[in-house]
Image 1: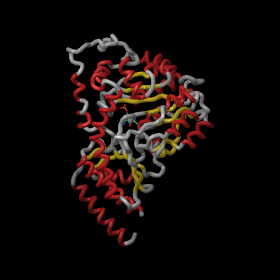
Image 2 (image 1 turned 180 degrees about the vertical axis):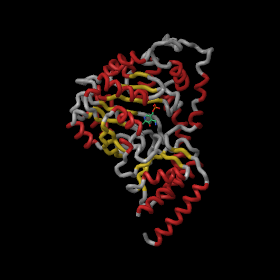
Image 3 (image 1 turned 90 degrees about the vertical axis):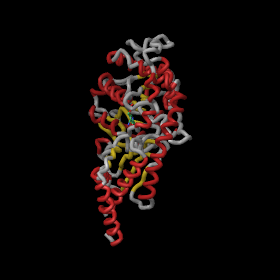
Length: 416
Ligand code: PMP
């Protein structure tokens, strides 16, 4: 190490020691909405009261059993949001992750349309664009589904790799996709990627795209990303059963008490409903009415998201500002600059991420575990770190990101 680097290292060690003495307690490990964001929907809790009508215009008593696939009005809202028809939607409970988990569990037990046998009786593999969402990978691991990583680009998964894998291996039954403002890279799938996903020939007759549109309206700019409709693209290519799409209001209304939905071809939906009828007599219609009263329709949801953006944008900007100031021009890290979603994805130099996360934690800044964005928690280059700026205040973020940048530079220098 040259004298200049040695002196910089000493400086960084001193700064790091100072941070440690501050006894910081900042948790940025998950993409949780902040209390301020949750407050935006508090008015929802005033409805329905005991004085409000308990029977909807379509004649459903919201307090009673029934309505397996959701209130017609709620199906319409989600259908409009997802650009499908109402008979292509099932409204579920509060969590889209549950819908994803159960979709795979059903496929393992019973197969899906086009299956020769339940997936559980065969070897099953899934393509996992990486870096990706850790809970998708956990579902696969939990069910013994082998994960095949494929690089995530700015436009979506590396399609040449995806196409050649699915064309040759009939045990590959699915791919995880977060098409808009992807977790964690913020990538938005291009129309070309959508067309290729819809068109590609798969060796498995029952291949599925798990289209997790978790950030469908989660814009940070006033120029929202749009893309072609994957449902119509699949239909046009003779693969209308290929898509299982998921969405929820977790980061629109309340993360713990929102509403989730699943969309798929009418034939898929009819097949799923037969299984669902064994699992429930119907979802929580009172929460559906609450959401309908508050948002009115899909356009109401889009309008509401502007208020979230007003809170979130300064937080993302703060992260970029500190990164630029502390790491800009040093060639020690690159970071994504998403126009929406909940995350910023950082790549450090190779073999540094785990140590950066460990040092940050020791200084009181808890980040998502390094490796979490890869199947089995193993980032082969040990370089990707997911930053979740939504929960802390702008002031807390300023501090947390300074600690983070110090750790990045410190670890990079120590590895030299
Ligand atoms: N999918 C993605 C890509 C997510 O980032 C999250 C939340 N972090 C979820 C699903 C969870 O959704 P839900 O709250 O509807 O279960």
